[in-house]
Length: 395
Ligand code: ARG
Image (cartoon, rainbow, N blue to C red; front, side, top):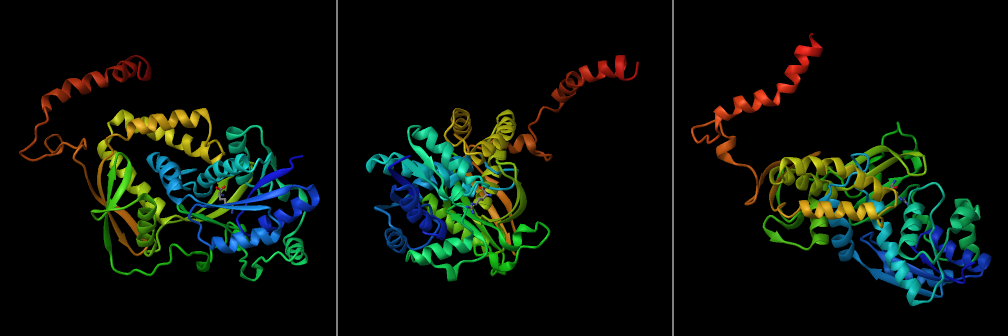
């Protein structure tokens, strides 16, 4: 077994108990790595807690900008929605966390990494596949999968070892949040028929009453401005999310197919992600040539599935990224989103490099389309079907 391991540390009950439990049961030194991907929380408290739990080192990495530019951007360019609905919030953050765990493992001479996931979820898959892709020599430890502690046992363990975990504040939900949105599971949500109680929502509370319009500016597939004001991507995602979320828009409630074969009821709040995907997808309708657009549509679900399944670091994902990047060269322009209570929709779009040609599209006097060309085109287009109809369909 490994002697020194880097643990993905959230500051929650399970990972805090994991620090001490691995030290006691497996005799390993634990380096706790807390990665800030925009989940909020006080990292000084997290640092103190990890040390109190018995970590030999604590590393806090602020990587919100890196997450935005290297993980959110590719997901947005490909309009990534798992099963057509879920913008991959948790799936996107695990590979960047692993990237920083592996860095810490090298820096501190660790021979293993550890995570606090159970055996039933997708996150274990993402942690482990990414680790094996980036650092195949490192051992992977998963204490929560083996320790057999109930939640009550863990609380009792923490108390007995003076690990200061904030269980009074603990909600019945399992929550995972980052810049791209928030995932909410467990509690009453485990009955897929039961409505999600309003109090689970924090990013999409309906408070705004007057309609508003937002103009999102894109350059080569990346959003760069809102209402003409240039913004860094992380700031822009939060800003757009704040606005559209205040109309109570940006929720997903679905039964999802996990990689490990379980159907689970998931509730998400992703106002920024969903609004930006909506806008980006619309701008592609204006700027991408038809065959490119349609081929991209076919590949998008595959990309989302790969990343959901933990294959961020994989040859197929890299090849799809290259295709997607090639398609984004001219996805430049503006999209106007209109928000009303409970609703956010595209109200207009424009681009200097768009493929919309007024002369070709119009039915008024400015029409430049060669109408006489259509007859021959359609005759040949239907020729095969016509022959089939004559000889086979109606012999
Ligand atoms: N079902 C989502 C996914 O697999 C969300 C997972 C949330 N993770 C968590 N530890 N609560 O991507």
